[in-house]
Length: 357
Ligand SMILES: Cc1cc2nc3c(=O)[nH]c(=O)nc-3n(C[C@H](O)[C@H](O)[C@H](O)COP(=O)(O)O)c2cc1C
Image (cartoon, rainbow, N blue to C red; front, side):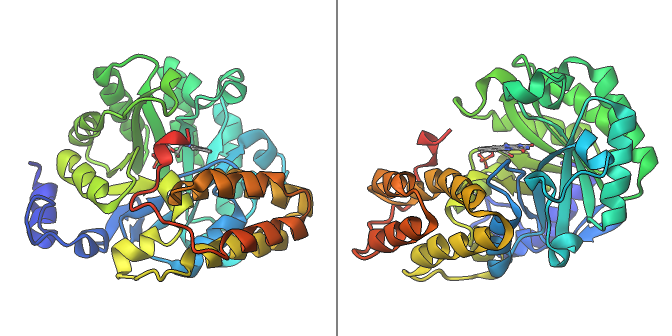
């Protein structure tokens, strides 16, 4: 156990303690670079899902330490594109706790994009070395850069030199099941000036089809002195406690569960108690928020994507999913969602997100 962890354990207890209180652990402030973050639970970056409207929904509940944006292409950001591009949209009110995630393969362009992120007032910048979708990797971005550690290091270094903001790096195990490689990358990112890492312990071709190897988070954590956030398959509080206790990570980034239950952060850190109407309220509320920020066709597309994860809450979630997908207009969508909740749907204790890759 490192001295830092002894401090953590003495202040908040460890998850094995019967008296471990997640509220205490997750409300313990954490220093990242020049910033102090009040809570240790974060919204993971989620392309199309973690959009500005969805973040407004989550912000209504609160309880998180930071929100990570959808990934935004560094070329568009550096050249002055957006905010019409959804990955680079925000509300002024969220900037103090909003980290902009950038992807790109060119250190100089990434640095220019980070300068714009700083000028626009974001809390921090996050570099994406985790995305393994073909459309990103074919441009040598995202997880593709884990095949080229020197270039990845140059990107971190260039962004570090360009901006004083807290600098986050999100990455995954790599392209082979090689924990030593992931540990080397962690050291490299820290040496090049990253202030914190979010580590998702899966190999790139896996996407989300196999269990993440949480033990690797512990190895990465013990290799560097900067904070490490664990990520991957936290679907309830018990998972979260286990991830923290097994890995001693400094915080947890939650992705799909937060889409299914946007009040998760408030529930775990602030003692928020959701009532039975919360599913209906969120489902209808998001339609209005999407329309506030996007045109109707984009709002419909974003809602369809959301519905796959939100459906995981219900015993008969496919009904919600198909009703949403059949709707062709906003009015039809509202009617379909209202109709779904007319008979109270049976709620699953734990969202069945594993079926939604
Ligand atoms: C629909 C979707 C979009 C995602 N987009 C991003 C992204 O833009 N940037 C990123 O670093 N990771 C992205 N991820 C990966 C998540 O941040 C996270 O690592 C992954 O979902 C595992 O965490 P979870 O089990 O809590 O969902 C995405 C995942 C999903 C499901």
